[in-house]
Amino acid sequence: MNKSKLFIILLVVALIASNIWSAYRTLDLGVTLTYQEASLKESQQALSQALAIIKVVGAKNGTRETIIGAAQNAWNAGEPFEKDGYLWVGRLGLRFNSNGHLIEAITG
Image 1 (cartoon, rainbow, N blue to C red):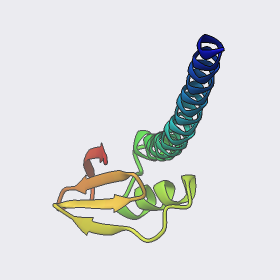
Image 2: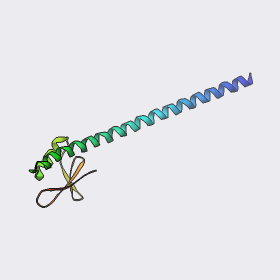
Image 3: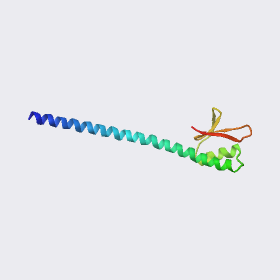
Image 4: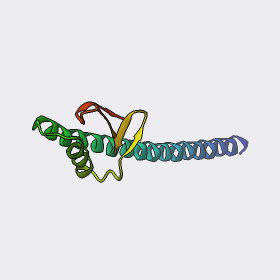
């Protein structure tokens, strides 16, 4: 009788431990997928904006305003703002020279 009680107690402890481990893994997977989805949306936004400004710059008539407009229209980017020498439109940082020509684009 004593051995069977010990065996049942060990089985219950093992069952509880495996359920706790399974719950932890499920929660961790949910958090991981949430961060992955956010990262994917940011990458999609940057790619969409980059492809939009490539079309404008490639057309040889890309002024500062048309490039910014193309980046804003490609994804609802909100209002552009300047930081560290770049004009940030959504996920793209754009640097223009004094003539208004695009000289650099970065993601951030």
